[in-house]
Length: 165
Image 1 (tube, rainbow, N blue to C red):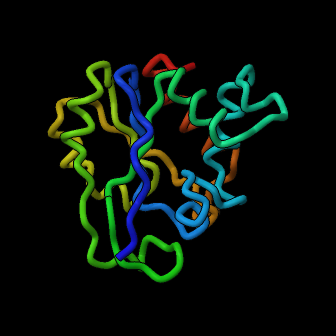
Image 2: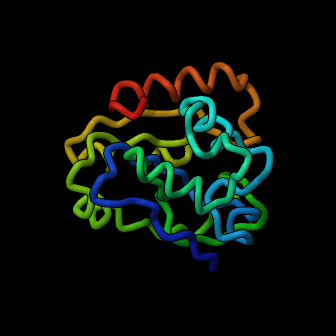
């Protein structure tokens, strides 16, 4: 059984992005979106051009602190699962994350956004929290049918809607 990453969230989190479950590169590095072709961090760099992430010193700690300071939180809909490789289609025996517990600890939360289709399968559950729920195009390299620019536009719209831009 693979165990996911702890949430990156705080009492100041306004928008929570939920992935499905970390890929092999992320689990190995113990960092969200660690695969070099995943577009998550490049999307954030484009949305926040004045960010310390764009200073050339781009450590995971700096990226994590920056997103938290801007009101963004990260977690996954699955806390644990069995899976060979990194594809969502290969997830088996998934154990759901305690989303209700996390939401309770984020009193400023305004919305939840699902990063990709597997995560969005849980939109009914997240919608029960009474917050707006958004479906974002997956930042995964496996979701290559959308260009970076098209993904960026969709993500930017959600970030603007909730005051993160």
